[in-house]
Amino acid sequence: MDEAKHDSSKTGFQVERIAFFSDGVFAIAITLLVIEIKVPDLRQFSDQALLDALSHMTFKFLGFGISFTIIGHYWSVHHRIFGYIKKNTSTLFWINLIYLFAVVLMPFSSGMLGEYSNHLEMNVPYTIYVANLCLAGIANCLLWLYVSNPDKDLLTRRISSARIRLGFYRSLVLPLIFLLSLGVSYVQPIAGRLVPFVIPFVLHWGMKGLEKQANLHEAPAA
Image (cartoon, rainbow, N blue to C red; front, side, top):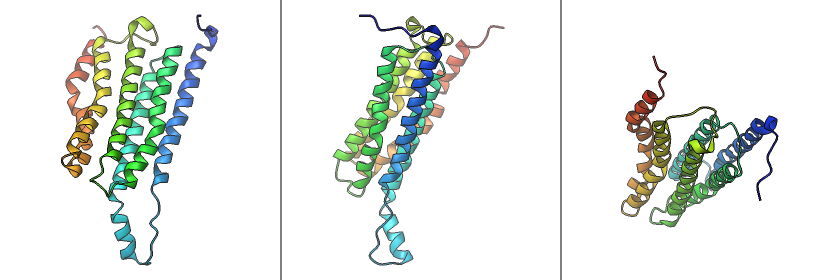
């Protein structure tokens, strides 16, 4: 059975509804991250005792910062992708829903990682966290590949194959680096947790060649 078609005058509105709903999900998820950071419960009230308690929360704050940045990054990518879209399809709806499913899981996986952040000998919390991020990365990749497919005619303008490749490779950076981080953490837990800090450098400088090629292919003819 063919899906029901919306009136052509409502096409743009349906895309906006998905975008607004997605923005709300991202906003809630990024806010819930901080709930997992509890104010220290001191038995002895002194500045030194408070500083000692906060020092034991270092990895928890680090995890919060990384998760906050990742959700912000995925929201930014989602915003850019939907800036290209001119109409909705049921497949787009479901891929986007899988994407949001991975996003709303992040406060849980991040909270679990933070709760056991001082027990670096435990591998399960970080494994679950990385699996969550990989799911988000795969969903992001699927969303981009579906939207950018010329046969689907979902874009407001045609983009080059170089631009499509750039988006594909960029969407794989986070899951691949976090998988590398997970592997390192089984041998050197602290070093493994620090591996994701290379992500901004890879995204900014590592993709310069692909970005230049994409811009060249889309440059207007003289």
